[in-house]
Length: 210
Length: 294
Image 1 (cartoon, one colour):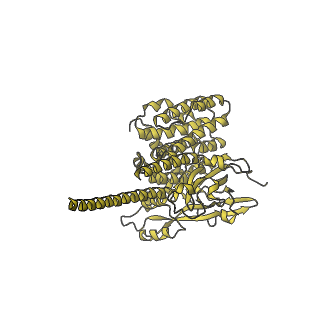
Image 2 (image 1 turned 30 degrees about the horizontal axis):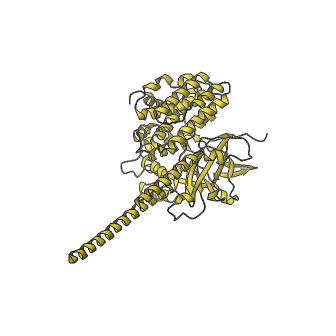
Image 3 (image 1 turned 135 degrees about the vertical axis):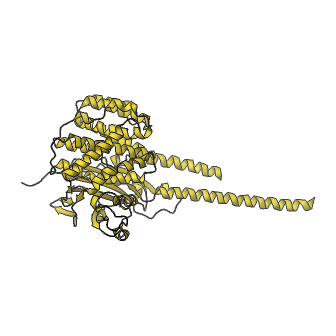
């Protein structure tokens, strides 16, 4: 039995490692067949292995005055209805008592970004604001409310695989990608996984009109 | 003798059963542990890609900012960095320099920097990043600046993909940090006239957002190769970016004809004092990075 498990593990590793390596370039192969206008490849593009029922977030910086095209593509076994939503993430400055902060941040829309919260809660308010810096009691220090505003949901757009938009003002975006289906109960989840690519392209916006 | 055989047989059977139970328990434990590894692998993931340096350099080039070779770190100094933390940081610095020289068609510097980055990538075990084939492509595309930029950018993406695929988040964090610092150092240093209303200053102010993503990524990897120490050194830069404010907006999606617009044109405001403080904080930190002894 032990030998079987060992063999099984070796087979599993040999299946998953190449899959991951192949996936890293998937957005370049799988997402680039739009008929849209020419745009430059953006280095924030990314691919990952995803499983059915899984959701992942890609954080993107969109700069003022640029047109962007975001294309999400996936391998066939993950189905045709890959859902993606685009949120704008921003912090709104406000003065609140320290004990109110957790409640305020907790109420922001579905916000469960651990790394970001770590940044904002632990570090962001402690040391940055000169005259308004925290008192030892911490009650008067400036705080930020984290806002995550939904800008686009492709399920409202016939599950379109891409979107083009103009950024007016630089902004921090989150692309939330969800693979449809139930999370697998099977131990051999590799059968339920595939590559998902997020191709980002950009070009300087052209002013229209006279 | 028969009396002895019976209890002995029973003992053997019991012992065999016990061993079988233990084996079963071990197998179940191993399977559970394997399942946990898989479940962890496919749980919700977050990715913080950082805009590559060539975006900044294409932007400043398009906005008429002149080339300044003195801002590039001396490629000959590469041999002097021995510590793996320094190597990873300096690797990032040189990849940004490579993007800069390529964007401004400084072919000689591009070739030298490409060779430097290649050498460092080998020392950092980032294999197959810079192949002989790529070097030949550079030689063949000397007259084609766009190709040169693409080749330089491709090296950067390949480094990121390689490090990420191989679980080298520590090196990747440091490399991304080095590359980002160098791109800001060059953009700030190349500016001659400071017009706070210009698109270049707005792009520099927008690095607040990039920095937040970078800082979050570094924080996630703070337990990896030297990342925690660098996070501590970034506090002065962080304080400047924290102090920049962006006008808040209401609903941020509008449709203008066929164009979908995100945002409402709210700018990140930066005063001259904040600009000078940022420039000084970047210079101090960048000097620490390129200092040979850790």
